[in-house]
Length: 154
Image (cartoon, rainbow, N blue to C red):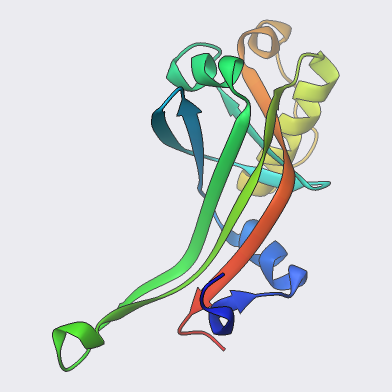
């Protein structure tokens, strides 16, 4: 990282950003064409989990290349200045790299969906129709590298 003064080295602070954020942007590569998509997500056991339709651009790309980059940011605020170059942004962010894997087993899908529901709805142990579990695509992204950065925060 070029600006070591902005680097977040405390993993607990990185974990807090991952917990607080509502949206994660997943970056994929389709041959020489980048593709990025926002997703709802949750982190458990050093993996990101998210779900999707079982068809579409994201699915097609992941079947060919499961390497991903992800970005998460929170507490974003534009900071004004007296002159144009004095403007800036306060933020806390995380960038990471990993590999995405399709969860195939019904129990794995259900557990990942429960993680998501706990994060977004505050509830645990949902029941799911088998047909719905068979149709939905659920992924885990094994985190291989992760870094944090902040600007305007102590």
